[in-house]
Image (tube, rainbow, N blue to C red; front, side, top):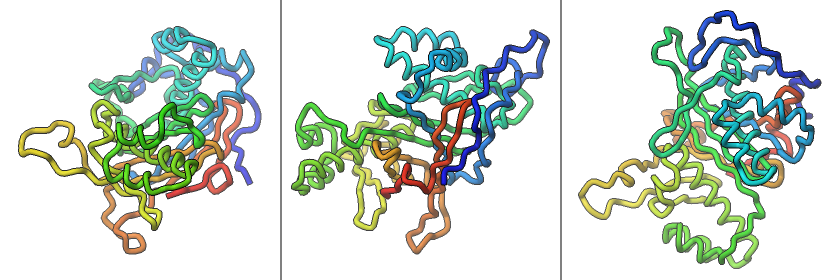
Length: 323
């Protein structure tokens, strides 16, 4: 049975009076935002919490306006400059989901409106924690991904995370093998070429693409900083997902190759029956699990409508682990 954390809608609290407030790590101001229920704490670096929402279920204009008010001025400008209401709505919901999710993991001590962000040189966003603040920063890492029909945010504690979602029935303009030859490694192309059924081949292609996206996002480099043809994803018969990095061609410096490693762990799941979701985190396990040398990745998933309802869907038909 779905576990409902919050059943009734809760309005956005009005801005507090402009009295000086104690500063919080990484925020401009210290307004409390206590109307978001806090999830169970992340217990270890191997635990991943995922929150997702479905844009098509949000039809109330006043509710969307409330989410828009959570964004920074630059985020609002970017979102509202997009071409078409659907893209604008998706951009607003993506940032609102991120801000409300991060706030939960500070026990709502940080107002979702107060978070500031920075990007690394490859464009991956991070929370901007203030270096001059005497308080300890929350060691949170996050990553977001979206399609036109689903937005997802992954959270970890003190370890990098990459997450990607793709529609299971995603169609491609070109032949699957033509795309694979352009982006994938020879071993991955060979794996796909041996699948005779076109529908099954298409699904395996989407799985590989989603896992590769999650990996390069976990690295913090993205597609441009870690091209897909520099590493292989192996979908083993026993359900394990492995990564293989090709050896260097020369002894010289190769900044792309030097950033790649095989010390990462994956999870692949069907989400909401419509999407594949891939998660990648750094693998620092030192104990064995069933003799394979890895500890299991702990995963909890919630479907959310922020300030309205949160539903824990782990262990239900909404989340089916593939690997």
